[in-house]
Image (tube, rainbow, N blue to C red; front, side):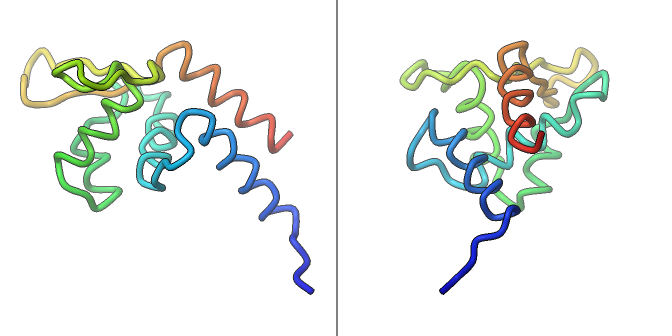
Length: 116
């Protein structure tokens, strides 16, 4: 018989919170939001490039995950969850900064209660 410890139960609860958005969500999509939350204290947030490097995914995959958590795809075929916002860098227009929205901050606070 396998005994499930507290860490595993907590992980299950966190994944269940993510599943309220999409029951088939992949781990790199979850990690995208968690990385944005982890670096929320940076005034500029983090960049799409940061996420791509940390997850080891393509630019397209990183952008897709950001659109999922943000306002959806650029062609409006898929709506997003509104938990992150993306801002173009005023100096380098190829750079995009990603930060949590107030709705995203509330979701992360809700997740943190699992540890409470």
